[in-house]
Amino acid sequence: MKQYLPKSWKLRYQQFRRYSREHLFSTANFALTHQNSWQSGYQVSTLQDIKLNSYFENKTHNIDLVIQALNGLIIQPQQTFSFWHVVQAPTLKNGYKTGRNLVNGIISEDIGGGICQISCSLYLCALKAGLKIIERHSHSIDIYQEHERFTPLGSDATVVYGYKDLQFQNNLNTALQIQVSRQHQQLITHLVSLDTI
Image (cartoon, rainbow, N blue to C red; front, side, top):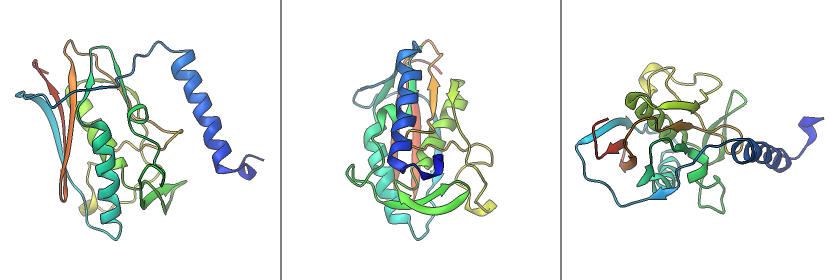
């Protein structure tokens, strides 16, 4: 029966379930405030290559949209970062383009393809900083040859709007700022602090 329901109905149901869990039955305080970039020597970072493929232009376009949403986000002590609380739904209306996606273990085209690279880089930064991981999902299958990987095997963090999120809590005694940028084929992600991390 579930397979006959329209995709939009399933998504609305999942959004309702997530909203109930996160807002009605949880005390989580989500980070939503942005500031101009902090200048600090205290940071953890990841640098990842964006691999050239037939979707490169669309992928970098989608990545740039996510960078605009995330860059400058402040995560206060005890606040929770949620990818989907900050980033808009990956739709044509929101400016996203078609890219390569992994859906039910099958490589396919879908709107917003490629944005998982940013969630992967944020996940690695959160691990390096010792933050508390609340929600993280790996891809359903490994689709990469060793030379194609942008993140070490087992350190990915996929995001699927309404279904799978990346969430981590700032369990440090200092506020953090997300700083993300792209220089053509490189994605640079920092968690920056005004105090030592």
